Image (tube, rainbow, N blue to C red; front, side, top):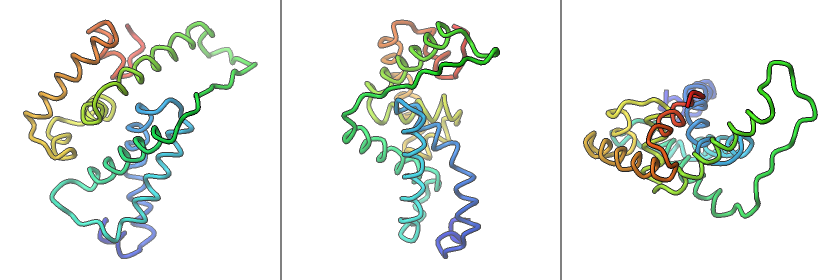
Length: 184
């Protein structure tokens, strides 16, 4: 599929986009404050993919690893140029099936707390935690993406979870937050 896309086949490009867009979006969404920013950065990643596809060379790492490296660079660039504070619009209407405003606020604060704690980790630790717990990739898949051994990935993950746990103030909350569980 990559070779076809490199030759300019639009259907192959569309297939690559469809195959990876959700994973790249989730990866970015856990590293920036708003969904709108995550959407914009995801679009930038795929624009960079299209622009750089002709020069892409298979090195033994999965194609997906190249996309994650582009995404990581986009997030870093975004943080460098971002000096504004993120604001959320308040809805004047709540549907009957939505949680109470207090519950929504608490959930938003917990997600924000996790994002802040993740941002305090090294880029390598962030990448490994997002790939393992958000993208639900195996240690082997993560090792291939980041170009490290499985043992190194496990070690980095362990240290990152300890540090994240300390920043969040509870070792139990880490796995719930990372897996997206609302049960604390």
